[in-house]
Image 1 (cartoon, helix red, strand yellow):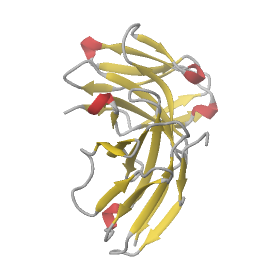
Image 2 (cartoon, rainbow over the protein chains, first blue to last red; image 1 turned 180 degrees about the vertical axis):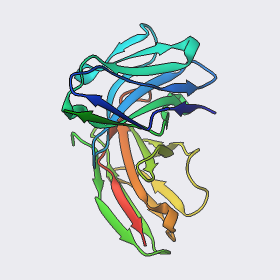
Image 3 (spheres, chains in turn orange, purple; image 1 turned 90 degrees about the horizontal axis):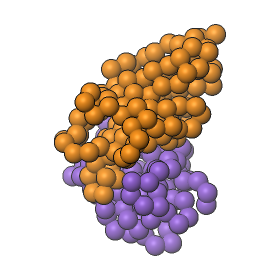
Length: 114
Length: 113
């Protein structure tokens, strides 16, 4: 069965500094990978996804992620964090019928300090 | 509509009572998904529909949980005889096709007392 590990429960980054959120997955076939963001009291918003092709994926709000098959990783990055980026971030892998069912990691809470 | 609409936003039930949650997917979206989020931790997949047909129910508890998506009606998730551990936020999402972007609703917070 597929699984997703986000090793960091919380991360604090200074505003303007760079960010990297870690995600490792376990899946027997070619994975479909996603990063979602959840603001307090809200549902999930898709930041970016990887299905195939270029392993460096660009998303919304200046985020990018790199798929590294050899490391089973799909880390999320942003060169300069803004205070509005403070939220919970979830990595997910798609499996199941038609690759439609998402298995999520436990999330990483991003705190942004002034 | 242009967003996934979930009702109610909050639902409080006594243990043993029934809970029914509703989801109106985005117009034109064929797929509907239900996820359960407990204690703001990981999301647990419950069930998905392709139009009114069950697409994947591998995450659905065998007992007490049921779901439907009927034509011209909001989809629903029903929990019979709720238990304390059912307390969670239940999110609905929809998409045009599988593998495409999921649009999530704002969730229904179910509190079982």
